[in-house]
Image (cartoon, rainbow, N blue to C red; front, side, top):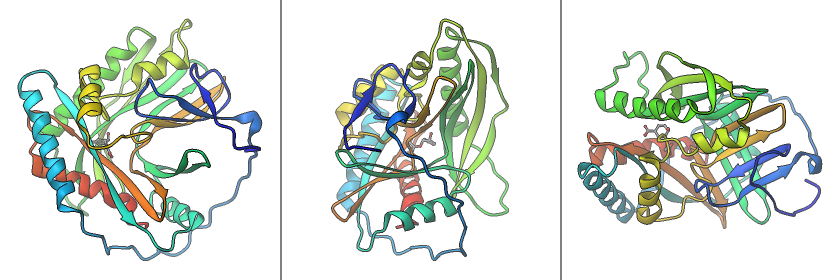
Length: 314
Ligand SMILES: C=C(O[C@@H]1C=C(C(=O)O)C=C[C@H]1O)C(=O)O
């Protein structure tokens, strides 16, 4: 970028790179393409680097707070006010010798199936991520999106079996996406649900594609999809209020989205498996979907597993 001005977009009609917060009523940052410099570099993968397994212990108060929050969510679900809500937390890790480029290269090497990024603005901060989730790809009027939810640990050579809890939780996301798309798109195609590997985790994924109606737009597509119940919940507005009122921190850009927009091709990703860096401290953001069948302990463990995506490279 040629200066440190902050630019924003509200209608997604510009060409550039967007960085959007979870809350749709907060401003979306734009790096306008016309102000940007581009370089490309060939990635040379080095030998396996040594993983940092020396994980810092999590504060027991963080664990208690998170378990308590999940119990609150379950109460609301049992009262039928919510069907699903994604509950998240942040975890802070002290970092001594931190180098941006080395960290970025480690991420690229380690998560070759993910959308790996580093993002910086002097007035906002430094973020890294390796996300398995595409919010949307739009090329002329044709688009692709996905329903991604349900988590289990990857175990080498083990047969993958999904429980009803995960199957139903992911189906809720697929149904939501379909319902949001029906008014603005045609030729909707919901593909077969498959298992994908993201780092050391497995998720359920259903790819969805279609053609955007002539009178629709990228803006309408984004507002229809974001936030899906993969990161927010159902009903969407009730889940959003629950999250904003009850989570013990502000999500800011975690579970927002980022990527390139233009009048021909746009590609946006959900900001998951991510961290922000400031004052020799990495803040890692993790969450998981709570439904009636959730158990607090398992949900806690899921966030611990997800936090390793970033801890592994620190
Ligand atoms: C919320 C996160 O991940 C999302 C929640 C998932 C789940 O609840 O199983 C799985 C994948 C993502 O849609 C996260 O990684 O922080």
